[in-house]
Each structure stands twice: as C-alpha cells, then as structure tokens.
Image (cartoon, rainbow, N blue to C red; front, top):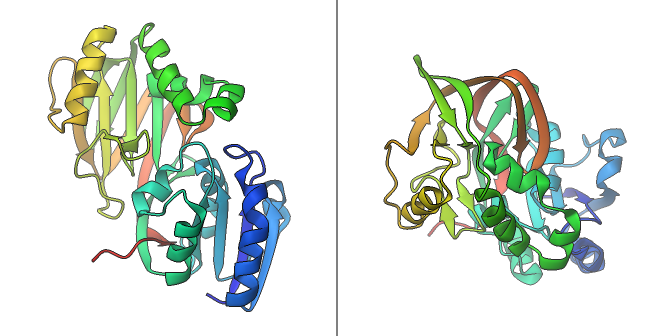
Length: 288
C-alpha cells in the first residue's frame, strides 16, 4: 500500500466521515507515499489508475459506489466504516470504532471475495426484493440520522404488518420455479442488523455461490417465527420460506422495486445475476 485514494461520503451515518477525515489524513501522512481525498460525487471524474488502494470512508452505499472501479483489477478496497449499517465491514471483521478500523487498515491483511453482477450493476452484499427492499428504500433518511441502525429495526416491524405477495419466476442451476413471495433476498454476505442475524448460516464471501432466501407468507406472525428460526440457525425450506444456494440465478417479474447494497433500484421483467468469483481484493481482519 503506497498510493491511497480516500472516497468519503459526508452524508453517511451521522456525518462521521467529517470527524474522521483529519485523523485519517494524519495517519496517511505517516504511513503512505501518496494519498488523495475526494468526495463521493467526484469519483466518476477522478483517475484512479495512480492508486493501488481505494478506501471507502462511509457506509455500504459508499462501498457500492466504488465497486465498478475495482472489480477485476489489482487494486485493493479498504473500508473505514462510518455509515448506518456497515455490513460488509462487519462481515470482514472491520470495527466501526475508528481506531480499531485503522489497525486493520495498517495491518493490510488481504483476501479476495466474490461480487455479484446484477444486469449492469455490481452487488457485494445483497439484493432485496419486496419486504427487504421496503425496509431499505422506504426508511426515511431523517430517521436514520436520528436513530442510526435502529431505524431499520423499527421500519422492519412496521412493514411486516403489511406484507404483500407477488409472483416471481426463478431460474437457478437449471431448475425453474414460480413462487408467490413477499420477500426475496439474494446474498453474497448474508448478515443483517450488523452481524446479529444472517439469512444463511454458512454464507461465504468467496465460495462462488449466492445464498437465496424466499419468504412466501404475508402473515406477520409467521414471518417473525421464521425470523426467530433464522436467529437460531434453524431455518429450512417449508411452506412459508425457501433457502438455497445457487451458482447461477435469474429472477423474472413484471416490475420489481429492489435495493442493491442498500441503493434503490428498479428492474423491468428480469434480473440476471452472475457470480464473479474472487474478483475484488479487500482488506480484512486476519483469520487466526
């Protein structure tokens, strides 16, 4: 790590990146040859070729923005988490505590992880349809600024009271099925609510597979029953839910409101998901 580009998002979380900027600048002055800070809206007009490491200082949305610049390159992604959720950082063992995150960054332990290509976009965490998209896309920004991650928890309870089913056609690994579902989650990293809940107990970031969760009930009580099963890693395919892994995946429906890594997206008729195995370098906590 010699040349570092820091992409910061002043709106992430509770504007922590503004507080962290000077501290990170001091660290970089002492540890790297060259560095540059840019705001996230400057990324598209910035030449990243001179930099071997790109640091996303923000939340999962900031990571999502830098992905297209890093997939299938020899550059490395580092994360200084200061967003609302910071799910990828949590999955990689990078603490939301600035000083602890800086120690991980300085140690520079690297690994390669998978990225999902969803039509013309990239996804490093998960894609959500239905209920999952409602939680991410319809939780007011003002609530996230005020309550942080707890805002998603409150929104999850409220949206569970008005679950609706929609018909989806799903093709995976040469299998075809049609389901009425209120929620579909396609996960590269399956952790939710930090690392408290996962829709797939053994989900891996570098196994070349995606983990798929399909919720088929509109009954909020049955939904929360399935949630409890997830928390205790007892979930299995039944009349209310489906769980499976796939190496190829396509989802069809008429109009689909979705989120990709927490960013609102709209799809018409079809989402094709290709797994780009171990296509990005990331800095993470070293596994002992």
